[in-house]
Length: 485
Image 1: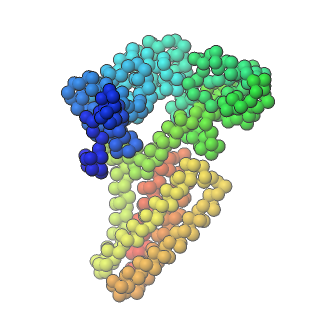
Image 2: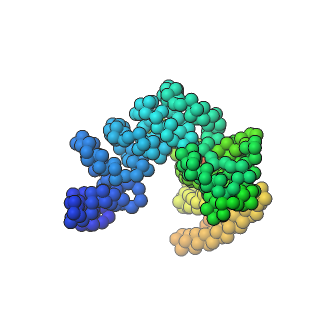
Image 3: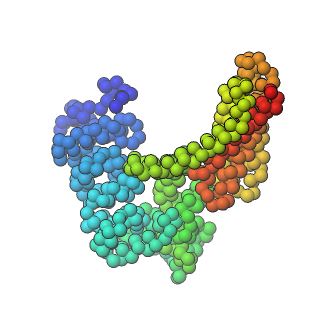
């Protein structure tokens, strides 16, 4: 590992204080400093210390190292080390620590880690978790292990988990927390406070709102927790509730929920079933996980590497990338076929072979820019049928302006290089034409795929590139054939 700081600035794990604190920082402080030495996230130096303790079978040292980490950091650590080392680390974690670590693991790592844990231990952990985290763990179990775990879980808890798994994978029903705080509208602020104090163990671990419901559990509004603290005890909830409090259906896609939270700046939203009864809640920390996963998938999809990750097998990664590369091979052959139409012309004017890729490459980059903007706008719902034509016109105008500017620059280079004004004119016209084609294709293709219910992030790139390659090569070589021969 290459260090970016002098060795004198690196934390020294041996420089620990004595009982009187005469030798500097405590061991816990030193270890925490090593863990953060490279910035946010777990440092490579700390991982090496853990691996050394595992190699030496130094249980006491391992306990000290892990005690310096938060559950989220231990989850990261399990992603960095080997399967054999994971087994040793898991053996050190007690029930409470294991329950905090498992929900924080990356999906691929979690599946592998769960396979190393006894079903009885998983069942014990699940009973201590909130319902959304419990369903998340059970979802990642193999069928045999899942049946064994559910059989060992309390029947009431099992019913909750099975109910969650009955919803679509990417729906609110899967990710919501069943633990909610609901109260009738005739309650007062004082009654809410007394209820929280008397039944604190039964309330959700975190909640931002108290949902006000009618006798049939239909939500009629919500009261934020800060309002409860500000108002006199005698204030009825009906006097301070927000009647327009946000609720979503159990069948709402999680991507739509992420959009709602982002647009309306929410911290929480109630969840209702098909009959409109309040059955759970979604909180902002759950939605942040969804947003991060969406961004990760979009970034990978744009490059055709959806099956990528540090825990995906070599065969799985190879398979996922193969089909994308196969499609790109087909489009490359298609472009080569177009070029072959002008084989004789290229043989007579060899410089055409050198300049044609310039036109195609510039168009491809311009198309990628437009496509990225449009795909992002579709994902954030900034682009709808109401502004489609305005967006298309804007991107086309940008394409024309950029096309003219780069056409002038390229023509100037050709004149200085080849002293041929006709060749400069040909490449300039082709450059403008391909920039316009790139802008139109970069906007229309993602919009069309989206309306056809196909993910534009996955499929747009290959189509846009094909258009810019074919238009670029054809426009340049056809014009050259007409004007230079």
